[in-house]
Length: 118
View (tube, rainbow, N blue to C red):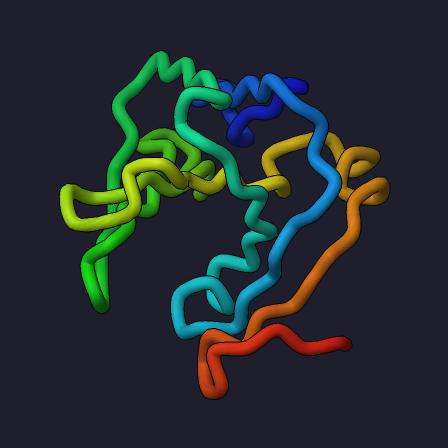
């Protein structure tokens, strides 16, 4: 499966089909509007024609990557203190038909730190 930022300078290639994404309402994910699909870094190929800019906040476990040209949030990776076996891809970088075929779960990262139904 292939996805990309709006300008096409950051391409995401996944080795496996996505069946589940998480929408989180923490202070940053709420603003980004991201739909996270989680993978081992070895299962994601990222081709960047430009460098991505990163943003890290809070507990400093993940770096959010943005295309420096169009600004799209494409993925996040673990920092040196994060879980090196887990990264996430923003499914909104893929065709709308892909998002229509996945189950969306909701995570309350703002208050209870638990999953909930919407």
